[in-house]
Image (cartoon, rainbow, N blue to C red):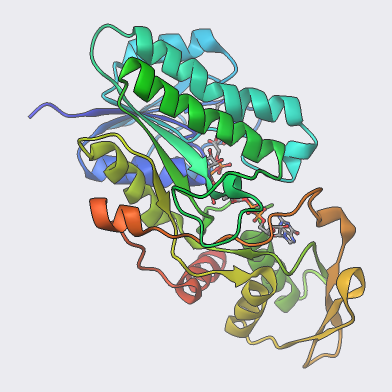
Length: 340
Ligand code: NAP
Ligand code: F7E
């Protein structure tokens, strides 16, 4: 049987790397788009891709950028994909306040550029997956489902909402098989170092090894619905295989505060934290050493916080039989094990 061809934008990111592994296992030929960078950015896929010779058996990389439409056009024509997964984005919520125009250009307009090429593509019908985000729900109360109102709290979320509606528009107006996966936070050993879960795990491990004295964090009270990226990429694939293109919420249905995540990680590392003070003056003291190991810093607070996210993923359970298996404790132990 002829192998299916997938093209992944964002293959060098957390999700892109797991999705590439999954699709190779499913016997796809995988093409991925890599940005030019002055230092290596293929660390997450180096085990499946020979980055020295820039090739491999089932996986091929192409230089490109979501801001450069000619590169997108030439990659899509060269690779002739059956499925395109758009996972590329400026994906950091806090940083989107510092580089708003860039975020809108990549996270917002990137999807439009790809969909326009798909619209005029003559060789075959290409299916399109868009990495939408629970951040779009913003200040809407949990649990959030496909019918919850978007109430964005950042330029990142606003850009994702632009992409979300663009996907729906191209599906309705041009009959393109295009879908949104509205994924809640998902983490893994491959998570970027400036997201809170990875930062907590790295920080506490370094404190335990006496390589760092204090871990500075922002808002400890926000709650998130955290799942494992490795199993969330399976939901992306399932969403594109369904005969009718639809949008789905993907999450665990359980949420924890940043402080609970911190305490759970500390517990697994044999550290007990005693909290003193409130708000910006809150500190965490190591019960054994009596030293301050956690401090709250204004620097890490959001301009406008998303306080509570918790998914209602009944739709994807019902229609696509997808449900998460990894508990938060297993997610943390997987991340710690890998760091060690
Ligand atoms: P990530 O680790 O930050 O990966 C983002 C990817 O996009 C990287 O490969 C990055 O390349 C690429 N990229 C950035 N700017 C680009 C540009 N201008 N042109 C081409 N590629 C570009 O993000 P992730 O956690 O894997 O998330 C994947 C997608 O899902 C993102 O769209 C994110 O916004 C969305 N999402 C994530 C979560 C989550 O909890 N992880 C939840 C909901 C939605 P470099 O490696 O060169 O930086
Ligand atoms: O923040 C709080 C922060 O940056 C989580 C992206 O993948 O998921 C991710 O966005 C929470 C927030 O993820 C620090 O204020 C406290 O309430 O890990 P995060 P995020 O903003 O939820 C969504 C679904 C996406 O789509 C995004 O692409 O943690 N927090 N202290 C902190 N956050 C960070 N980064 N650093 C801190 O020191």
